Image (cartoon, one colour):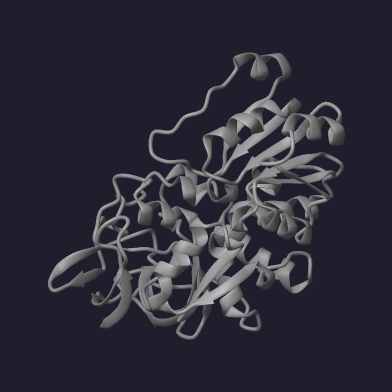
Amino acid sequence: MLISAPVLIKPKENMQMLELDLAEPRFGEVRVKMVASGVCHSCLHAYDGSHTGIPMPIVLGDEGSGVVDVVGAGVSHLQKGDHVVISWAPSCNNCKYCNLGFPALCLNTPAIGKTTGDVTMFQHNGKDVHHYGPSTYGSYIVLPESAAVKIRKDFPLESAALIGCSVATGFGAVVNTASLRAGQSVAVFGCGGVGLNAIQGAVTTGAYPIIGVDVLDSKLEMARHFGATHTINLSKQDLDAEIKKLTGNGVDASIIAVGNSKAMEQGLAILAKQGIEVVLGLPGTGDKFPVDPWLLMGGERKIVGSRYGSSNPLVEFPKLVELAVSGRIKIEELVTKRYDLDEADEAFRSLAAGEQARGLIVF
């Protein structure tokens, strides 16, 4: 079928709205009519060229929601009309990590720009157009059944799009990766879409204090709205002095929800003994940050990465919907602005300027 999508031809240039040929679902795949897609920093890094090695032309988008439109042969758990949240980590069902429930660590992940089987499902004038994960900026997409997670039909599908990346990633980094417990302290660096969900995760654990760290007062105001008990503006306040004032000996966990290597260095320095730093954000290709081995050995501190919030989307997504329905977490409030599909370039501009909690492209 023919679909519409903004296609990135070259970094730092406006995308082109093109009609693409979309292949039919193969065995074990479904076609989804998209309803909404979040505007994510990882896509911004491809868009602005800060992440290298991204094949182009490419359809961006790694979080979204929609309705199952066509079911391929061999699909057993979905049917036409199901409401689904899109996962960028389909399970191969064969490797060690997928069978442990961590599909984001799958050993059989397709090459960058490809989908299952290392092929592309999009073409334009007979030439391949690449995939950025599930490519949720496509008006229709084809993906493995395990990447379309069924949710209850009474939950707003537009809001559900954000569960597909920012909510699951931020929430899971605190609850799953850091295993934060009631009464423990946490500092969240970067109070955008992912960071705000890390704060929400901290609230559900009973953590205290929950400290939002950013350089923009507007972001810190949002952090308080989503549950931060305290905030620190790095452009105006001394981080070490403020952390010492709030915690005495440092935080039990720091969550680095921004792709900034300096923040990663700071997040380690403010840890209490046996504290854990969880790195979520990806800086530019090749960026590194220094680590003082004494901080690790002398206080048994830890640095860990968190990919997709150490979660299994098939389990996590429906759980997050239930938490939202019960009022335990906020999702609709994350949406700063809605955009039409042909406004994706403006959505990226706004994201880069720090104007959003989360932008949402609505089809």
